[in-house]
Structures are given as structure tokens and as C-alpha cells.
Amino acid sequence: MIPMPQRSNCLFLQFFAFCLCAQVTIQSPPNFTQHVHEQCRVTDRVSRKVIRTYQLYSRTSGKHVQVLGNKKINAMAEDGDVHAKLIVETDTFGSRVRIRGAETGYYVCMNHRGKLVGKSHGRGKDCIFTEIVLENNYTALKNARYEGWYMAFTRKGRPRKGSKTRQHQREVHFMKRLPRGHHTAEHRPFDFINYPFHRRTKHINQSGEH
Image 1 (tube, rainbow, N blue to C red):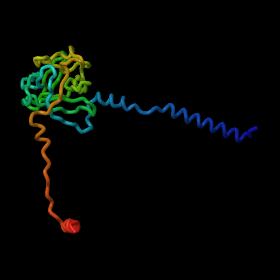
Image 2 (image 1 turned 45 degrees about the horizontal axis):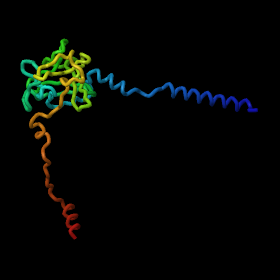
Image 3 (image 1 turned 90 degrees about the vertical axis):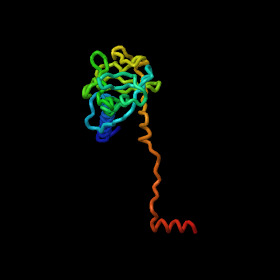
Image 4 (image 1 turned 135 degrees about the horizontal axis):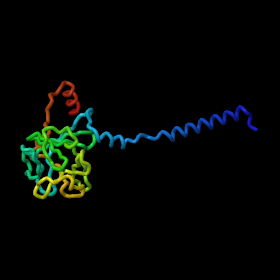
């Protein structure tokens, strides 16, 4: 028969182990995916914004998206056209971006009718698009304010209403391309620099020759 003090100690240890297991079970790991999803829905005013420059090639029209001075947007520009050069700014640390024409400064936005329009400022959600990389390597741009509405253009390069768009349609598929001549300015050949020899360097070279 187990003495009473030892029996009490055993019961206390069992109770402590039970409480410890219960605490481990209750404390679930943090849901990082949910955190990222929630943060991507709001504008990030803390992180450093990433700015990129490229063209958007429309799969249907075979031309590039351009932002004109009259605030109209279409996909009729040739490669290298000044109005086809787009400045893309990140809105969050996710994949939400703001797109504006480099020549005109107007942002690509979508109104309540699903029509693409140019605006002088892009602070609203109607001027924010979510970049979605598709399985065919094309990119779709979904508007942040109007759920399920995408940037789209017809075969003639005219904008299509967002309410009539779906992600699988060819009209919403785009390919990012660098402006003509842009890569040559950023990727220059390496320059070899000849540094003067020091006394230590000369001594090492002379020792190696012997």
C-alpha cells in the first residue's frame, strides 16, 4: 500500500501534467495566412513602396495598354509608345498595386459602371488592382473596390465593362513587358577598374614569380 504523502505527490504530478497538456492544446499556433489576407486589404503606410516601370501587353488586342491625356484608356498602343509606359506602385506588401501613365500622370481607375477611367489621384480603392498570376503565366488585374471585376479590353483595344469580365476570359489576360530600350539603360556592361599596386601587392607578386 502506497503511503499517503507519496500518494498525494503522485496525484499532484498527474494534475500538473494534465493542466500542462490542456494549456498546450488550447494555445493554437498563429494563423499567418489570415494575417496576410487582412493586411493585404488595407493600404500599407509603413513599408517602403516598390515602384516598377513596364508595359501591359493585351492578349486579345495584341497591343499595349495606354493612358491618354484626355483620361481615356485603351489597349491600342504600339511597343515603345510614350503613353504605354506605366508606373506601377505597390499599395500593400501583398500584390495590390496602383497603375498610372508615365506620360500623363493619370491613374487607371474603374467607376461604378465598370468602365476604366483616368484620374489625377489614385487614393481610392477604385484605383487599386490586385495582380493575379494565372496558370498560363499571364497576369489578371482585379479591382479592389468591385469584387470580381477585372481590367479587360476587346480585340479592337477598347475597354470592356468590369461587370462582364471573368478571370478565365482572354480579355483580362496581360503580359508585363519592359518599355523599348528600358533594359539597356538598367543593365549596362561591367566596367573593369584597374587599381594601383601597393607595396604589399608588389611584394606578393614578386614572391609568386620566384
